[in-house]
Amino acid sequence: MRPLEQLDLVRTSRFRPRYELREACGTLTGTLIWTGAPGRAEARVGDRTWSLRPGSCRSRLEAWSDEDDLELHLDHGEILLAGHPREPMRWQRNVRSAATGSISSAHVHASLRPHRRTAPGFEVTLSGELPQRELVLLTAAYELLR
Image 1 (cartoon, rainbow, N blue to C red):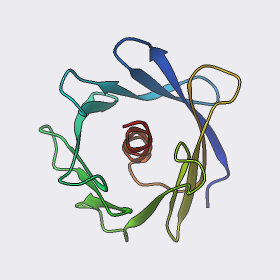
Image 2: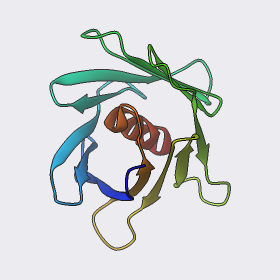
Image 3: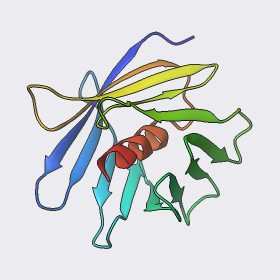
């Protein structure tokens, strides 16, 4: 099992919301950018880009890419990676504070909490091996922010 990891998701643009996912050492690992269409966003990790959009109801979300066949579906709290053999992960918003949430499965636990005194964004704590880590975390942040 991997040791506990700390990441930051920091807002870097005010007018067209843009968030950057950074490791503790400051290395950029991904970005989340709102597009012009209502409720739509893009998640970028390296040279790959996924389109994020709400599903047919509030509890659904889809992320897909034209470049590869990896898709992510968030459906009633379950995160499914299409084409990935692992069991689904569980996504849960905090009941008391809708601005926080967690991802869990048998192999991983991640939590997203808003920064208190620094730039707008989230503190991300991660333990375990999260498949497609950046895409899953950016999608979870999009779910919290929409």
